Length: 81
Image (cartoon, rainbow, N blue to C red; front, side, top):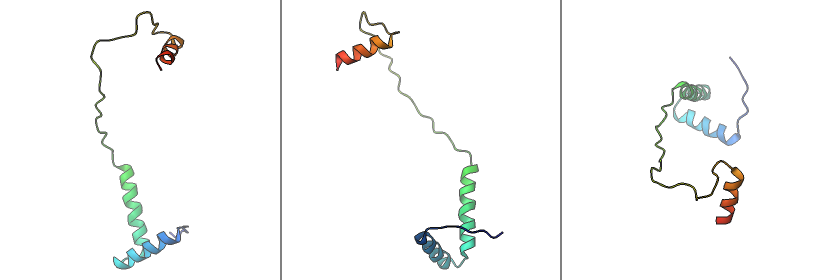
């Protein structure tokens, strides 16, 4: 199938040079690039397990501070700054 592509001049020049070096056509070079990209998108990504640090020490809120009140927490944060 024929199609028209709008490529940056510098990119097209690099692609033509690479195609000539590899003794292939520009069309084949573009096809290979698309196949690689499409294959990457289909390949399942392996999610790397992320270990989230958890503080297991003792502590808590300052006595008298209501932890259920956003206003009280924000006011306390402003006082400490």
